[in-house]
Image (cartoon, rainbow, N blue to C red; front, side, top):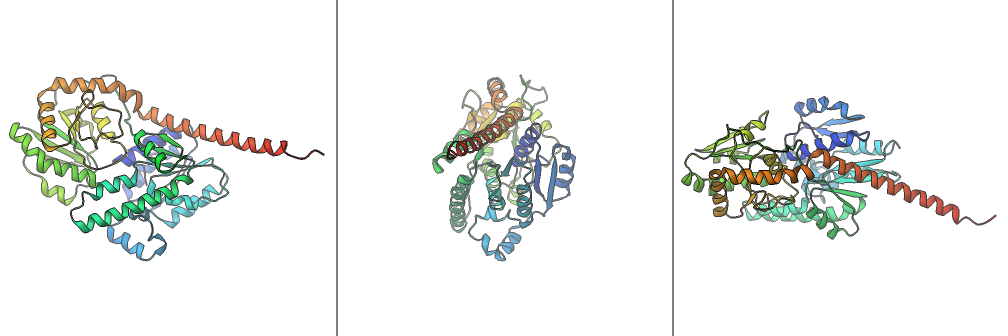
Length: 413
C-alpha cells in the first residue's frame, strides 16, 4: 500500500517509518498506487529510496473484489481483506527482488500483505519481517459487533475467524513482527509461542517541549479527526452525534463539532445537522487543532494505537477518549487525558473540558514529556532500525557458529 501522501493512519505510520529506515539502510520500495495523487506524492519522495517498483491498480469496489475472487478459487480460503490485496504482479516482483541476492531482508507491511511471503524464495537468506498496524483478527471481531444486521455480523465474525487462522498460520514464518503496542505484542506471543516481536508504536513527527494555548481557540469547539470510511471511525462519530452531542449542546448551546477527514460516508453526510461542520481532506490539520478546545475519540472498536490522540496532545489540545480509543498508548486516564466509555460520562467529560481550560492544559503539560520520550517518530524509527540490526547480527553470528561447528566436527586426517 502506498505510504504517500500521508493522509491516514496507515500511510502516516508507513511514511514515517520509511523515512527513518531510509536514513540508515538502502531501501527498495514495492508498492501499489491507486491514483494519480498517490503516484505524484510517491514521485516527490523518490530520493528516499534506492529503487521504487510501483504498480498502478485503482481503488477496488466491493463488487470488483467479488468478481476477482469468483475467478480465483485459490483465494477463497483467505480473509476478504487479504484477498483484496493479492496481485500477481506484485508477488512476482517480490520473488524477483528477493531472489536477486541483493537484499538482507524483506519487510511486508500489514497482515493483508503477509500473503506475499509465499513469493519469497526458500533460498532467500535474509530477514522476513512483518509490520503490523493492528491485530487484524481482534479488529475484525470488534468491528463485527458494529454491523447493522445479524447476517452481516455473522459474515463478519466468520471472516474474523479466517483472519485469526491466517495469522496463526503465517506469523510463525516471520523472523520478527513490528507490533503497534506492547499489549498486542503480548497477545501475539500468546498465540504464537516463540514469536519475536518489536514494539513499534504509532507516533507524531514533532513533539514540542511545551504547548501554548492559542488565543484563537474557540471555547466550544470539539474536534474529531480520522479516516471517515473506516468502520470504527464512522461508528464512533455517529454514536457521538446521535447520543452525546445533543446532551452537550443542551448544556452548552454554542458548542460546535468539527469533523475532519477523508472519504466521509453517505451515512455521515446524512447525520450532519446544526452545530456540526465537516471538512473533507484539508491541506492542513494544524489550522483545526489551533482552534479546537478539545479533541474527541469516541471509538467503540479498533486495534493498534491512535496517533491522533498523540497528535492532538502535541498540538496542545486535551483529549476525551473511550478506553478502546486510547488502547495501546502509555497514557493514563486523569493525568494525561479523560477516559469515558458511556454516553453520560463522555458528555460530562467533554463539557468539563470545554469549561475548564486549566484542567486540559495541565493534562497536555503532563503528557508532552511522555510523548516526547516514547512517541516521536525519530525515536520509533530508531527502535525499528536497531531491532533489524540486532536480528541481522544474531543471524550472522548463528551462521558463523554453524560454519565453525562444521569445521570443528570434521574428522582428523
